[in-house]
Amino acid sequence: MGKSSKDKRDAYYRLAKEQGWRARSAFKLLQLDEEFDLFEGVTRVVDLCAAPGSWSQVLSRVLIQGQRVGRAAWEDKRYKELVRLRQVGRTPATDEVEPPPEAKPRKDVKIVAIDLQPMSPLEGITCLKADITHPSTIPLLLKALDPDYESTSTSIEASQPVDLVLSDGAPDVTGLHDLDIYVQSQLLWAALNLALCVLKPGGKFVAKIFRGKDVDLLYAQLKIVFERVTVAKPRSSRASSVEAFIVCTNFRPPEGFKASLDNPLGAGRKLQPTPGSEGARTQPYRKVREDGITELELGSDPEDDKDLGQQDIRWIAPFLACGDLSAFDADASHKLPEGHVSLDPVQPPTAPPYRRALEERRKMGGAYGKTKLGVGVE
Image (cartoon, rainbow, N blue to C red; front, side, top):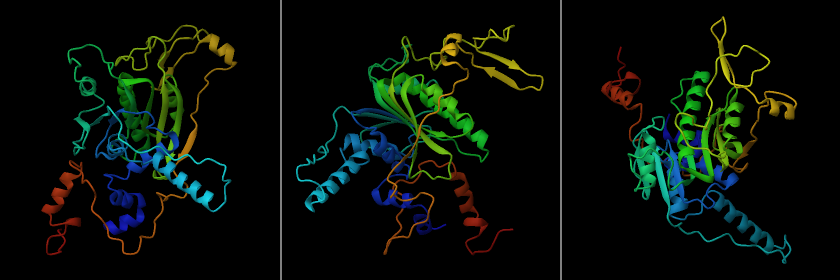
């Protein structure tokens, strides 16, 4: 498929190149910001699974360069429309139209980007090549956030916590949806572990999820430490994809909570053996059935059950669509502008997983096993 064909099939791929973004995923963060105002009062950010760096680019333009993109650009557009309506007499002259604040760089900005893959550097952003699922990454992150942090320290909490943690990570999908959803949930759990170590009270956490069976259990777990949990689907995310983004605001850990890799959500109790009495079950337990299936009972508080009048209450997060409804549809093909010239990507992948396949293709003489003479290899 040629570049022009992909430009037509994926409008956000084309727009990303035209606007200088490293990947089309930049529009997902911008549309999330339009809905949730993610960058308000934010100066310290951790970007997990950052490669190729489009979300870090957004952070750099908004926080370091002071550009008005995302929600700020929406506010500018709204202000211009209100001024236009006032000029043509569509709104009363007595209505005050306040201009949006002036764009300017923020002070004391600290942005740390982490990915297992190497990422081309961005000005003002600290890039770390590390695995977010490995415990050794936490000291590296704390050292990047605070140069005075001692690597020999036993503490895994940041002395200078951050305002926002982002994670746009996803596994290399296999097409086996149950497996893909499970691996993605483990990646999200690792991102949450890091967030619990570095977020300050009132902070925000945004991460990619794959919506699947029992995903409401994940929402309930996040609700333990965040006041508000919302599932969002940006306009630039294809409707045919199970991808969505969990937006958690107002980090409020329970009283006495301490970040721990052994008990990530501060769970102070371990799973107990199956008790003798079925009716007196208040502790978690696991049981292996005769057919080999393991049943896991999370347990319950009898007082809570009495107050609620029922058991097994599950909390379901609200679902929001983000982005202007008049924006491009990510699942549709769009007519290219007259005189359109297809551009190269802003930043080609530095270490793509398919590099070996490309090298083997070149050895064979090109695509589909053709030699330079155009003769197929048998």
